[in-house]
Length: 416
Ligand SMILES: *Cc1c(COP(=O)(O)O)cnc(C)c1O
Image (cartoon, rainbow, N blue to C red):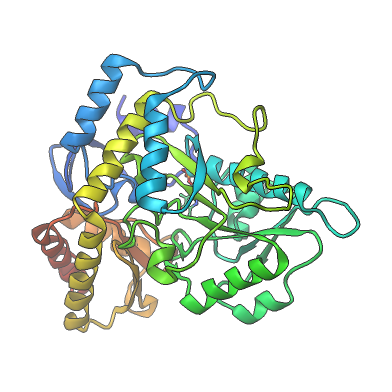
């Protein structure tokens, strides 16, 4: 039985999978089961920040796996403490506390629970709790019942109603729409500084600042979903700092790139005091209020710590900025009409395509046509909605690797 056949027979068909069977990776390269080598600018959707099997990550996993893989959160876990400290001191650089989950959706669920706790602690005028979280159209926050309800895309929610109540979706990048948005029950605003799955849409500085001002005015939590964009991906340790660096969020969620491939996510709550009893936001989730069996175990925390230290000490956010500039300059110089725009920040780049110039067979989107052609030439990239592709190379990608990928892209877009 081939892998393809085993999938068909035994795995739920929730993904439209390409026939590719990757079996080995090293840095920016991936090999399939036939021995063919690809340049990987998909990196597990912005997960393998250091590329595949980076020696520092492999060594950290090996060493920790041979020492202690898992213990309960009933005990002190040195690797978890060290990782939380690394994130606070060197990446967020604001006083706060973390909870470790196994994925981005779970991190957002925890964050939503924190917002509801906040709404109980700071209720409406009549004493009833606030509970509503404002999110945005085209957002993506994950697939759990909570994160799915937070996601502003009907296609993600189709057939799964009744949805968890307490969410409302506003248009993204529309400061005017914010003004009348807040209701008595509203407790928080959650947004991606750059929408990734929604097609690579950058929040404008004006919009982010308007959201922050709204939160300040109405005593709402300002929550950033940095699951895809955090930890160097967008050219700064945190993506919001690449857009409006002075903002101080109340809550942040992460996953994807923070583990370099091991399943880990987290959410962060500020130590900011929220009322005159002196309680901090980070003090609202006390013992018994939230938990995860696997979350923050020694193995994943040792791995994530190695990844984040490598990103910081090797200045990989700066490399992301530099490679972004090279990619933008090269594509602009081509002047090919099928590419209508390059959007995004750092190494989360969306390349928008002119659908009228791409012959598209029934059932395929223009983006999918280009993704398939690129795969045939040896470059792996994910689509970003129906009319754009994404470039998500590892943060340590070299000039030569970027040049090689761009040459493959050029060959495809000039021979449509
Ligand atoms: C991928 C993603 C999630 C969900 O993360 P999972 O680990 O797949 O649960 C949430 N938010 C954003 C912005 C994402 O890109």
